[in-house]
Length: 138
Image 1 (cartoon, rainbow, N blue to C red):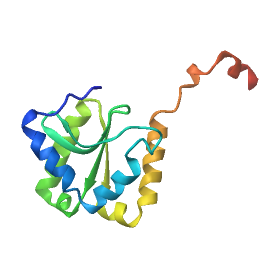
Image 2: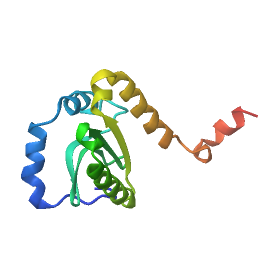
Image 3: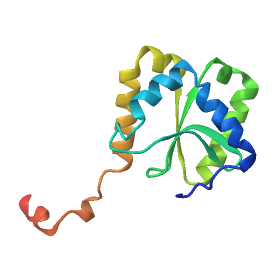
Image 4: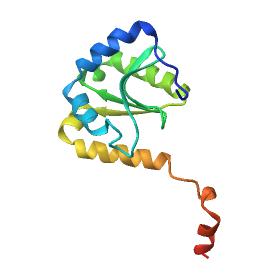
């Protein structure tokens, strides 16, 4: 596994339960990102990363996707979400959040945003171009 260690064993049953009880938004997003449908990347759902269980995780890109329902607007939950994000970012993970409403009402827009973010973060460096490619622009 990349920079993120596996979750704690005590969360194993909870992860299984969360997989079977996914929200409508999580189910719709999962249907579009599973089985390498987006940029040939493998995502895992309800994946444990140390003490946390994240909604979706792509180890190839060190990327976490969180799907936020109404509860995430609660002030206490906002504080917990920030702490969680800080922790995950300290592990070198990028965290992207989408609201349930956005996924349910604009799934294509969410997928387009996700694709753009994935491309933006992983465009090949100009220093890595082939020798012959550099000469073509002269």
